[in-house]
Length: 252
Image 1 (cartoon, rainbow, N blue to C red):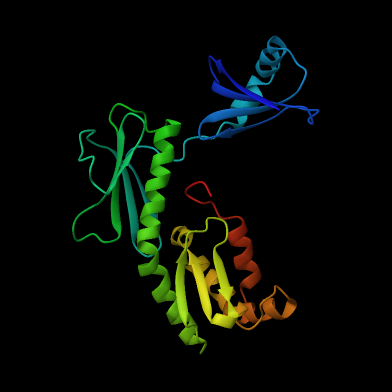
Image 2 (spheres, rainbow, N blue to C red):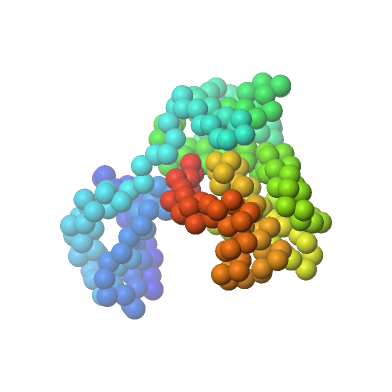
């Protein structure tokens, strides 16, 4: 397997991977860069012709920018994030500053009193829609969620567990992006992902109820779903479908 890079006038920088075990072309976009898997044995000119032949297909699957300037993102629980074009000459030593290659994306509270409101300032001379800035806005949103998760998720989880008379010795916040909850029944310990901050209130509660049901039923058995359905007031299947189809505000 060999890998090299080429430049295309509209597709930009392309990483080409020649795979001896592959019989067909495949491609995906990663952080704004196109990565193409090509069957081995083609000449460089044939590869260039193949890429040009599929250019429209590659453009079709190119991710569209998630974030734009002057957009306010709101999440249940009063969380608010405003994306704006800021001043590039911010304090680079600040812990709330995220460096890009040439500029700075800055995350800061909206005001000293606004505990759930934040501002993301993007560089004035670097397009907000560029993959680099989009990636760092994503990082800022994750930082907000990690900061707020203990304040938002754990008090709610404790309230729900107390409603059902269930003992949880330890609630923790995890850094998992795809696994939203984990239960350790023997330790009476439950972990909730910081990503739950981006969910609606009812879906956060669903994740909590799901993990609480695992205290009694470790596996996803019919008994587990019956218990979880009780905790979810008869809406477990509906909430599971909502979560499956949920539109996340950032890459997950």
